[in-house]
View (cartoon, rainbow, N blue to C red):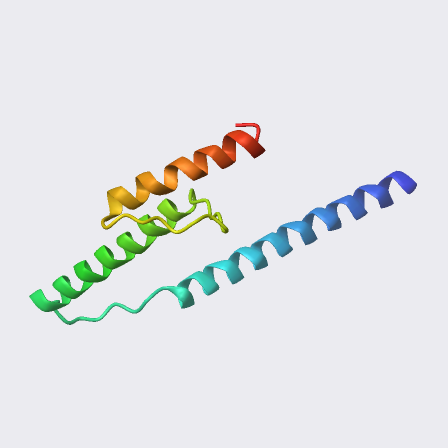
Length: 107
């Protein structure tokens, strides 16, 4: 008697699990369908391609700049370099920064 009740309960539990999985799958599919962009029947012209290309280039530049800046180190309190152009300023910054790292850090 108990064995048959346990077996019946197991069957009902499995049916409920399958029903819940199917309902979740249907909801996910409906959400996916509603989130897809609508496709227009218009033929894209050359300017829309150039706009899209320009936007892709701009996004690419921003992402590249963000990734490059992730490696930056900001140090405050050093004297302002007295060089005229970028390479001279970089060289003028490098010496005090190297000295700071060697003297106060383990690198």
